[in-house]
Image 1: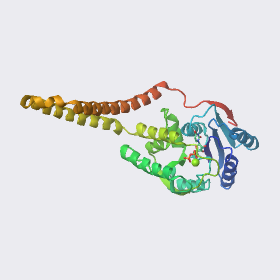
Image 2: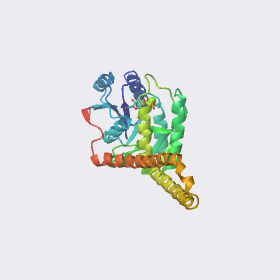
Image 3: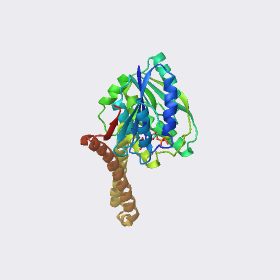
Image 4: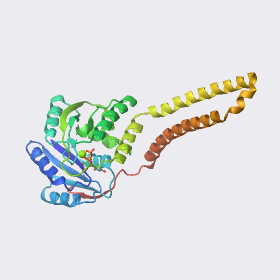
Length: 309
Ligand code: UDP
Ligand code: MG
């Protein structure tokens, strides 16, 4: 069996050599053959040079060198698209996902005849409380919004087999929420519990802005409930509007002099309905934006160079 290891890297000069060492020592101890696919996601530091040196010494090291930073999900997509393995494991380059867990995942896959073994974080060391809290609630809210059930406390660290790889390669959507897509595919998916380590060196490459973008793709690509929410609010506001109109009409018939004082009411109504319209338009806009992305059919990434392929 050939195992592909998919390792997205963005400005990881401080960790990449250590990652290579840990991976080779773990993978060298098993009887399967393997390839290490490093995706250099437009790093501006020495990541590429270090990877290139490794690739000259070790033919198992393959590099996909992006022409610019396309983001973590695109890097993983490129890795899955280009891997030759009978199975592939997606792992962060910062050693937060311990390479030793790969062995456990392979064992579970074999024993349970699973198509996917996904890592579930029991503990997360060295993360900010903000990341822990947002992640915890994000996955639970996403679950309540979505038609598909996603495992909680799960990242992209997972082992997938050829079926999943081939199915994934047929997915045409451009903004991929990979952990969601893989859950969505079905097949047999089993968890593997592990303790998430601290980042080996360097700092997170997922600032709030990228996290938000990522979360939005998760929500808007896997749930149509926000769209319905706007409709519900729309109905309620229309109902209130009609009710208010009736009250105004009756007041006009019974007590016309009371009606001239309407400034506050008018302002309140304008703000309220304006808000409702904005929410609705915003949600529609999000879906239209997604349709737009799909319609463009631009490549998700551009590989400038391929090494050892
Ligand atoms: N990463 C990437 N492109 C990006 C951001 C991150 O390839 O634009 C990689 C990064 O090198 C790492 C993985 O994605 O291997 C996860 O990123 P990071 O560890 O910074 O995220 P965190 O663990 O803090 O959520
Ligand atoms: Mg990390």
